[in-house]
Amino acid sequence: MGNQGKVMTDISVIGLGAMGSALASTLLDKGFSVTVWNRSLDKAKPLRAAGAQLAESAGSAIASSPATITCITSHEQTIELLQGLTAALAGKTIIELSTGGAAEAEQLAALLTQNGASWLIGIINAYPTAIGKDETVLTVVGEPEVWQNWQRVITTLGGSSRHVGTEAGMVAALFAALFTTRQGFMFGMIYGGLVCKQAGIPLDVFAEQIPVSLGVLPSYYQYFADTVPGGNFDNPPATMATYAAALDDALSTFKATGTAAELPQLFSDLAHQGVDAGLEDKALTALVELLGKK
Image (cartoon, rainbow, N blue to C red; front, side, top):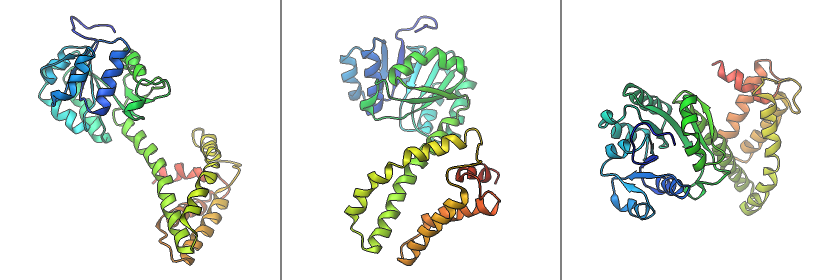
């Protein structure tokens, strides 16, 4: 790495939980010199034995390298930690891999900028055991030149990592979007289990059929990818009206069986908002634009 002045190591890591330890260990294995710090020094012992230098304090860790990865509980805790170390931040880069919301990410970025530090804020889309693998993704935001300076470090930690924007709050929004997508599937299974239970269908039969239904998901993804990014909602393979009718059928079954129907009711209501807005012949995904206007 390009050193900024006289430094002891290539990079520092603050926070040595399961993920932070995996990050530091991977960097050591890949030939980087690493300084580490953690409130509980016991967690640093294996890394020290592997060749890491142990800092006496968080401020010392930041001073020891041109960039520091922070991987603690939340952006709020990172802010609390760094507020007492502002004198050490000038000319340094903080790579924040803790979790948190958009507002906290913006607050952290402002603190760093005000104190002469550059920053990258990212999310790790993997478990600690996947750190260092080619397919692992860290999704990162920050100024392009900062990304370029530290891209080698980040792609060492996740070979498929991507820089996706410049605003600190963007990565929290992307996390919320992807998490909502996954949880839509989870809650779909929960409500599916409810209606099967009410109808007397054995839940193991329902569970066995879920993988069959998952076979449709690639076409759902393609439907989204073909329509939303370019705003191409005309002539879809299934229209808003088609989805609304099918959702109504599902909703009527929930109601007929006396099953809690909040989720299918929401789906039906949203589709009918599109129909009522004159989008009956458009793709269901045109709701992205319609709802975005509210």
